[in-house]
Length: 638
Image 1 (cartoon, rainbow, N blue to C red):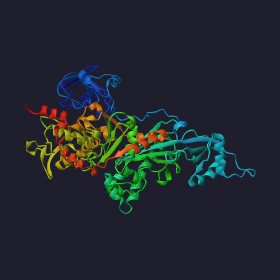
Image 2: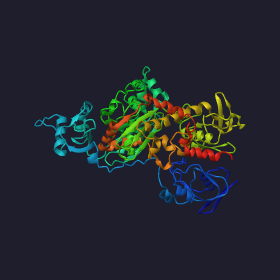
Image 3: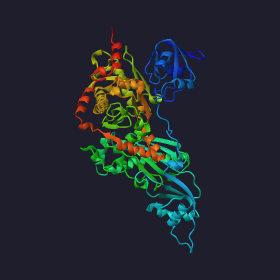
Image 4: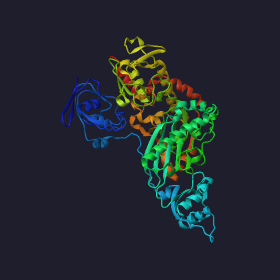
């Protein structure tokens, strides 16, 4: 077995050939920081290979100069023989890396001024109590105090606020903090709205930024005075039990009681997340006075209990794209009943507010550089432009890359295979499993990795056909064509052989072909080619785990220099967070929605041709993927 020596310290360890440097370090008791959990996304586990044969599976966080110097990602580099490895200080590595494509941190890209930027504000007031000499009604009395003490004129209130007002004023002995919505994007010059009154002096009010994803929901709890995100929570969207993708849910919504049930499921998920954060922060959900929501058009319709069937029927027109301001009680959100509820604007049936929020969060609306933005999910949304113009489309990738439609597909939870390597000579796989458990299935990142490895090692051909005549026990005929055994039954959690089948491969090819065809048609529609794109932004939770090398090898992403790709994580919730704090950011999102032109791919005759051409690995025209062509040439025997 190869021996690895770790410096400083000279610690030695013998490991099987094909072991990752990170695995060798763990066995040797050598600590290497891995903030992303070994996904190869953060680059923080970089080490220096001083000598010895290693294979770098990915160098996406490293520049060419870094690699030349000997740097390697320990979680992505395999040891093939005796090696000497130096583990440098982590802070040194952070400085050396030329680009950081890890998920965006929860920080605002602008300075926040509560008095200037925030639309929901608190004002401490002393209200004159009524008397026989002054029998002004309670609301007029409060409005008078707001005007005289804070110059707030013409305040209004909903019936729900008025129903609680008299008791609240008297319980506080007329010494209160008024929570006021100063304006909203729908009526920026409209009168202020009283949300509630709180007893005594209250400095802090709270807000939530919400991303309603098809698969998962994410919520940020935000201190509106400081702008800080004090807590975050996420969970699977409760609607997944009624359909993996938007079309399935639209169909379910048309059933008797289906729409109400779907609305209840998603609101229930959000309420649990809000209550969980409030318990941790020792506040009440009713202390939350503002909520901003982003999501795709279908998710927004289901959240608001709007019938979504028109979204899937030609000419694909939703009920509404720009939802007027609401109050939380209208949808059952467990925050203050009169809290402002702002649903961010979308563009079309398949380009929703998760994309408009992402456009602003990523800076695409003012970049000045030709940029392509992609949110890969069950519905791959794409935006192309330089900020002065923006064009968008959506391609129905389906849920294959989220594990659905694949025999052993599963979500990225414990027991899911998230990375696969196949030995070129033996065709034996090495797998990485979330939670270091026995494998139960394969998640999206694992499927992309597996598909790539099977292709480059010759397990399957460019059409996705298995070489069942190769005489290898792992490549065998199955019930519906060939299949490859990723893990034998004795190695899996349920004792069954874990395989990927021809049907699975076909589903994955269709999903990747739809996305790549979307890229191509969108660029062609404005007279450009994919080579003209200077920056490629990958958004969404799934994008954080995407291995660019593998995605290019299967033809999911265009073959362009890796440094053009940027990972920004969940830009939908980040955009909602920006809108929660800043009225100017909210207007930017509305402007982006107005600026975005939507291209309906189903009405574009060239889409089917592009889709058909992309149903191969990596593509019918291999010259579109020169790096893959070169890699395949190198692997061919002399």
